[in-house]
Length: 114
Length: 111
Image 1 (cartoon, each protein chain N blue to C red):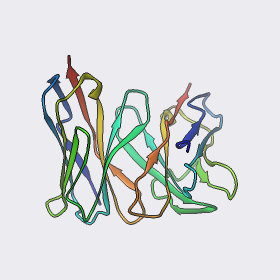
Image 2: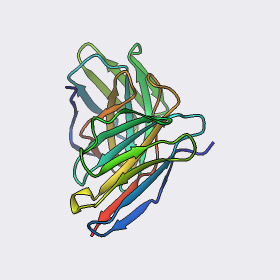
Image 3: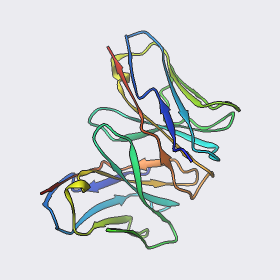
Image 4: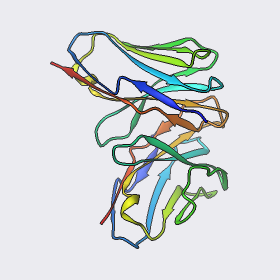
């Protein structure tokens, strides 16, 4: 049973380009969470999705950021028109249920904006 | 608004010592508390999960306790080894498994 898979592991984008980060949850998990770790800062919640639904996006920046978790395929975190301040490690976690269960994390995608 | 604090921010100990990492949270209405380990440039490895109805969990040399009413958790590491060197994070969750992370403790175990 493979763990949470994130790709790419490293992503370099020029300012103004788009970044697409992918997350495949563990088998049997239908709940996905995205977190961001800025340099020298802690992990911050961004968005919680269930298949085809955004449940909680209270941590998402209002502009340029979007997330989806389609019926088929991985969850995607999309950042449009990236800026230097978007440089961070983006982690995805999955769980089998809505609450009271352990969250399993992927290895993260390290985004560098040049 | 839930806030999670970890003390100390950094800790250096000689190999073989027992040590305690502390985590406190401001809102006691949590469902779970989870301890993670993060190695430099890597992802998070889940160490222990304590559900709100539990007082402690043990895994090998690790023991985590939870005092929900006082908003505190401790992670006890017995007989520390250089391979334990990492950043340790605690996180609490509410009704939706959304995790609020602490600031982390950077542990260095000297051989």
